[in-house]
Image (cartoon, rainbow, N blue to C red; front, side, top):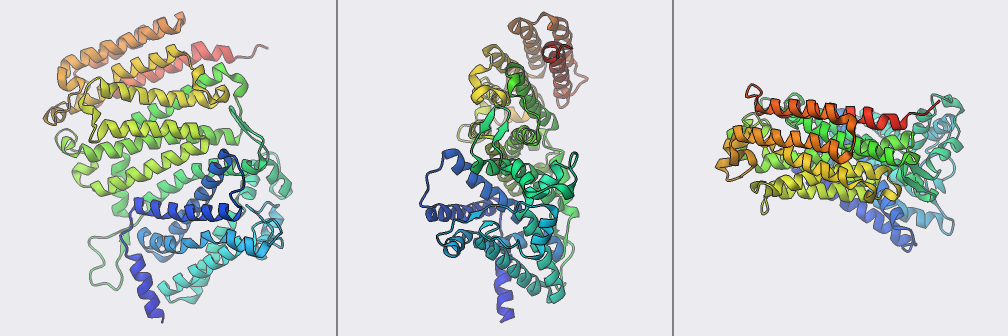
Length: 566
């Protein structure tokens, strides 16, 4: 019997699961969970915001849970992530059933399933009494059955893999501990948030409720629905924590060794090979562009704070909201990098020989999986901040796809491609502004600022194509540098950047910026004309000067307005 089960498990483990397949399968399970939950509630009238936030809350909670369990099981059993992910994804169908169990066992009594809110003493007591003595509120009947079945399943799976009852029991205990911490996560977070002002032992359940069930208020968003407050706040936290968790996932991911495992009882896995891939990708993600994307959100939010100082909030959830929007922009950029490098493989063989896809350190298929992971992360992070931001990041991603990929492949057409790219970056700046604007309304953004950004990006973005002239010409991609040649392209781009600096003084009507604008604009022009600075590095110096100019603008123009007179 055990041998048959082992064969079944082994066949499940060996399925060649990819990241897109994992995300699709996982999403289908959560969709069934939410459909069942709403059917049992007769699709009770809830607001659109509540529906979105509650669905996202379930998605993020279970995604966070399954990634942690994959990491744990892979380390505990010394198996590949693919094998443990296959098994856990198959067993994850159990999450569909807790609402059904609650409906049956609670009867006419209303069960409210969320988290365990308690003091440290109470949390410890709940751990040893399987979530405490009140299954109608917090960790309900259905959730307890779900956890029990999950732990038993993991004990059985570990025993099948190791034939060691003690190790199986220990693995089950660790799994229960992980699930218990996740089930009481707001309590642990409250211990952390209140630590500077309140000792852990003095925190009570009402302190947890006070933080997580109080009305939502960060920046321009205010909401009085306590039923949805927990969803909104936990979504911000889970999405933020998913970022280091996903990075850790790719950092420690083991791959089968090409030199080991032959003739052995069990294939050997190591992490060295994949870490080489990790660093190859990390070196190729254009860090200057990451700084630019993060800076656009930050300076957009700074301008919003200047116009709407009453919407400035300083608390942990405001931090998560701003951080998630920045990370959404960064992951959006990463997705566009991975997609562009896949499509431009032949061009990169001519002009970018060190790209991971060209050297063979990372396969095109692996880059495709990284694209889908980055795309999903950018969408999730943006949605935790709000639907409007989700749409902005989605528009950014669509522009990136149209820029790089057939049938449009707009990068072939100078002017159109650059204009759309400039618009996409200005959208990111606008989203930072929206975060603080009343009603999250972008119409309050001064039109002169909007058009100044469009012009500045339009004239400066062709810099990135200076290094690709030979490959672009062979592929009939007619960028400004490909059309004009490197010398004239440097001159035209440099002149355009100098004019942009001058326009910033005239359009914004800020005389104090005249001298910095002229000096930095002239320096940018000179840098572009200097052939001593390679086409691969010229953008680093030009954008470095731009960051300096923005800093001076903030210090000379906006900072004085925020100073409080004594």
